[in-house]
Length: 121
Image 1 (cartoon, one colour):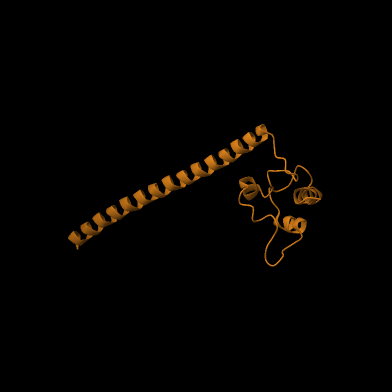
Image 2 (cartoon, rainbow, N blue to C red; image 1 turned 45 degrees about the vertical axis):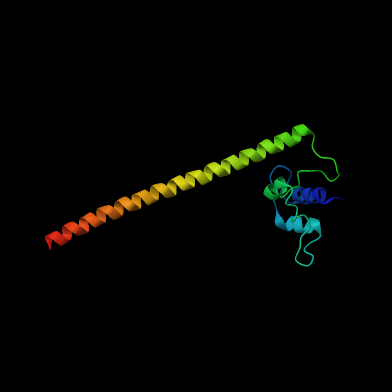
């Protein structure tokens, strides 16, 4: 039985078909035969971005792959994930810039208050 099928059967047994996490490291270790000299089968395939994100290889056990339509759908899905992550990072950057501007404005107000207090005392 190939690793993908074995992993899928463990996922279904543990979580049921519709209610499972994207990746379960313990089940992956079990399906792959465990750690061997600190290495785990299937974790070194950086050529498959879907596997990195979801933990499940995008190709089947045999050498055949999705039809071109399936690949297009997967590519579109991954593009959507990437676009979402980029938008999230841009929002975080904008928030940090806004916080920095607020801190600078606060610092200027404190400097003015200190100058006024020095004049008064």
